[in-house]
Picture (cartoon, rainbow, N blue to C red):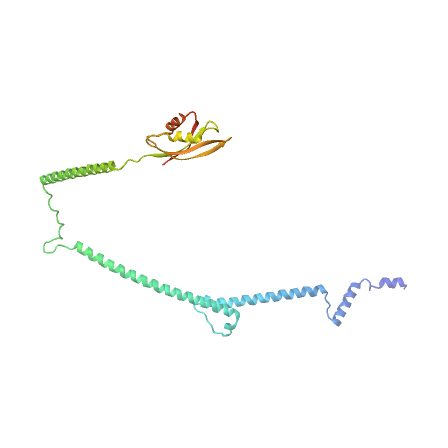
Length: 290
C-alpha cells in the first residue's frame, strides 16, 4: 500500500470540527467554562432586572396586605410586627382615616334620625288638628240647633238719608274751595305788594375807550378835558392814562361806567368825535357788565 492510499483512508481531517469540540470540552472540564466579556455584562444586566422584579413583587405584596383590612367589617391587628413595618404604617393611617369617617357618618346619621323624629311628631300633631277640625265641621245639630248662621249685615240706610248726606257733603266741598281760592288770591296780592316795594335792579356796564389824536402835536390834556366835558345822566367817568402808539403819538385810554338803559357806546362815540379838531377816532377797547 502506498502513502497516497494511506492518506485516502485517513479520516482525521474530515472530522476536525468534532475533534475541536472534544478539545474544548476537555479544557472546560479542567479549567471551568470561559465566557467572553460581553456575556458577563449581559449577565449583570439580567441580574439587575431580576432584582428589580423581585423588589416590585415585594412592594405589591405589601400593598395587598395594607388593603386587606378595608375589605372586611373591621381591621384585625393580630401581629404586632406589622405595626413596625413601613407598609403597616400606611395601613394604620388608612385605618385612622376610616375610623374618623365612620364617626362622622354616625354623628350625621344620629342628627338625621333626630330631624326625622321631629318631622314625624309635627306631622302627627297636624293630622290630629285637621281631624278635630273636620269633626267640628261635620258634627250633627244638637238639641235641634245647627251651626250658627252667619250674622247678617245691618240694613242699609234709607235712600233719602243718603241724598241728604250727599247734599251736605257737596255744600261743604264748595265752601272749602271758596276758602282756598280766597287764601290764594290774598297771598298773590301780598307777594305783588312785597315785590313792588323792592328797588329795581339797574344794569350797568364798564367801558374802556381808546381816543386817538391826529398827530403828536395834539394837546392831550385839552383832549381829555373835552372828553370829560361830555356829561349825561347815567354816565360816570373814571381813571385815564396815555398809551404810546408809535412815532411819538399817544392815545388817551379812559374808563367810564354807564347805565345800559340810559347811555350806550354809540352815543359816547358820537359825542366825543364832535371834537374833530383834536379827535381822530374812538374805539371800544373793553366792555364788561357789572
